[in-house]
Length: 112
Image (cartoon, rainbow, N blue to C red; front, side):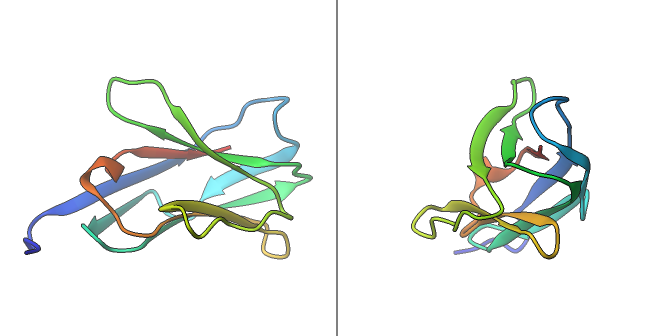
């Protein structure tokens, strides 16, 4: 049974590595999300400039960022995975979708 007071805090930030992406800027659409276990979560970043690929990372407190997924403007998301990503060229937006949030998803997420 879902406890109404048990929610997950998912924070999102962006970072940019020079030379990995040709994007001029990458900005998250929101800085954090509060969700309940089992809910679908969509984290989004807007980007500008030329992009060959974008990547998502997750970081737990006291740990290094871990690579989650790489996406291009032309790739289709693998919907069979609990975490999937899609870039929308027309909107210049990249989304990370968590199909069913778990406690282990409570972390800091980066788009690059």
